[in-house]
Length: 482
Ligand code: NBP
Image (cartoon, rainbow, N blue to C red):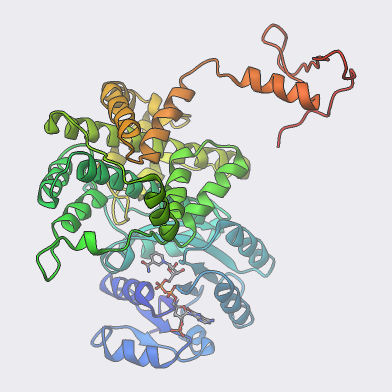
């Protein structure tokens, strides 16, 4: 009997996905560049299963039933292109290549188009959930050649995580690089969620002077509220984890955050598309700032250490912080969905936002109860332009407003950096202000560069230039927006 699917790449993700597919009754053919890893896998974790090995790409192709489905779980970038180049001459028209790595979506756009010309279908799929997700149920976000989806759907939906209603956290996202785009936004939102939690931690630790056990208890309690999520849950575990000397391990970890680029890509795309994705972008910059450790140490000596003590009833502050965290999180997701909406419109992807929320509901790092409410919001209005306008989320934003402002103001007053929570509030203030000071900005642009402006008392699209000083000419610059 031939194999149902081939997987190339036997690192942590590939191995665990293969074992997961095997658990669901699929016969998997496994290949890896370094052949010894095939043997190690077959004699190790895959021992006693139906998984078979292939020591060359030809052997892999020969062992698969048609149309062949070959999934790459290798390092993103050139490695994917090089495997595609080697596979294509061995494949038949109608065969399917799937890239399950963390690929930047323009690469997927390019690969879908290039392979289409050769009669090969290509799927670029986000896979989230790390090692455990891959093994027991990841969130899977496939996009690319729609013709390929019916062949891949049964396998992917079988191995994916399931919601509490047993719905698979995997569905077709859209054409071209839509799957990888949605995975990129997922990772950006993950940056935002993590940064927000760290800001709450710093407020509790430095501002309220709380112990790690106290903070752990707070996160345990928060996990029973609307904030219920994987990241809040692991944060409570981390805060309670003691090093061998009995001290909290977290305080021994160097405070410089790493990043692999997906948050940065999300920010770059937001800038390209003109979407105010402030919270995620602040979260990326917060990691950049954290990496300037030596400079920060010197600057603290130069400016003096801040006494960031927050006075007042601790329990009242903790509840205010919870509300600020929840409200900021709503803004983060609202901005992320704005970005997906713009990308969907620009690329003709016709994204289903309720489905996206469902795909993230289980298996992935940002899984949370909250995503069910997002799904409900898009079920009510599939074209919702701002998540915060949905009645459920609007209610939370309004109820949290006072506490959120108090936390933001206090952090500024005592010098606790909370870039994501404060920028989220500033965003909402801007978004809910009908008249912003951009009129003055337009006047400045026209003053120094004859960039023209529109008038509130004239139809939109009619542009005016004023000779502000009497010295300039009446010739205006060309009007366009980049
Ligand atoms: P890695 O990203 O570490 O990739 C390891 C695989 O790539 C191995 O099979 C390795 O073969 C192969 N490879 C490399 Br590296 N360079 C190669 C080359 N020049 N030619 C051929 N093969 C090469 O594995 P991973 O962490 O399992 O991740 C796989 C993909 O899934 C990545 O795109 C990753 O970003 C994504 N992802 C990872 C996670 C996670 O939690 N780790 C989560 C979600 C998505 P070798 O054994 O011969 O060196």
